[in-house]
Structure formats: C-alpha cells, structure tokens
Image 1 (cartoon, rainbow, N blue to C red):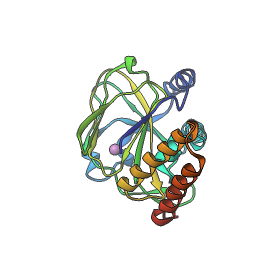
Image 2 (image 1 turned 30 degrees about the horizontal axis):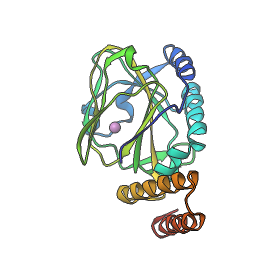
Image 3 (image 1 turned 90 degrees about the vertical axis):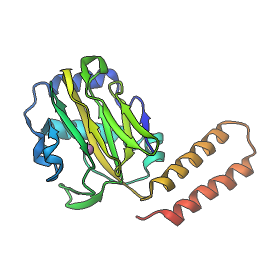
Length: 226
Ligand code: NI
C-alpha cells in the first residue's frame, strides 16, 4: 500500500527546518548505503548523532505518534529515528531496494523495514526533478509532495530518487517495523478501520459498528506480532 498523508508538519515549520538545514554539517550519503546501493547513491546526509537531525526527528515522531491515519496505516511496533538527506544539483539515488534490517543505534534493537517513509521538507517549487519513483503492484508511481507531507510505501518496493536538475531537495526518511508484517493484511486493516471510523461518524446502527470493530480487533489479534 502506497499512501500520502498531508500536513504532518506545517509549512512554517518546514520553512524553519530548511533554513537550519542549509547551514548544517552534511556528510556523503554513501556512508549509510548497503554495498550494492552505494553504487547508485549520490546525495548528502546528516549524521544521526547531529543535534539538528535529532531535534527534527523528535518533532516528526511526536507528530506521527498522535496522527490517526499514520497509526492506522502502519500499526507501528518500532520506528527508526528519522534521518535527513539533501539532493543538490545532479544528485540522485538510482533504483534500489532498502536493506531489510536496520539497527536502532540508541537501543541497539533490530528493526525490520516493513514500511519506508519519506517526509518532504522542501516545497516542490524549490527544486526541479527529485521525484521519488516507486514501483508498486500497479506500476510506477512518481511522488513529489508539498512540504510537510509524508509518503509511506512497502519496504519491499524497488524505488529511486530522480536527479535534481535545479535547486535543492531536503527530506526526512525512516522505516517502520509494523506489528502486521504482511502488506496485504495491513492494507485490509486500514480499509476496515477507515470504514468503521466513517460509520461511527454517521448515524449507522451502533450494535453493528461494535460487531465490525470486534472483527477488526480480532484480526489484529490473529495477525499481530509484538
Ligand atoms: Ni531507499
């Protein structure tokens, strides 16, 4: 399931962040790529220990932890602290699949990358190119969102970032290990939850809503790993 969620951060918040990122101490992005991906990757990243990366990451996580759509779509077990990247002119990250396992450096816990997430920090009019192109079941999706919006997609997907031909593209990216490992099961639960929320907001029969929400929770009980 590929899903865009708007307004995780306000336009003003992203503007402030970008202003600080312009002054940041950027490192070659090859440092965190796997041995195959390293050949494809040309960008810069902020070290995870950098206080600015930590501040921005904490802000994003605080917003996401209370965002009903994000929670419903990901059912997170663990979230890797967000990292920040920068694509300047001619920089790109060719087709690749992300590593399956990451280590959360602060806790030394493993995280299986069920879901990949990119939060766009630059406004789309501030750079040319730089689309995130994701191959999913229905073909290629080209994603370039307003500042503060996030896209989530299965970690199993082949994807790339097109070359930036003008301007600079800043983004945050991270991975989620879901309580529901299977993308198809997660998508079903997301649909079911959306339907229950919509019925609850309507004047539908309360007893039937309780029955449906029981189905939801019993499916989670059946499928979840915690
Ligand atoms: Ni990637």
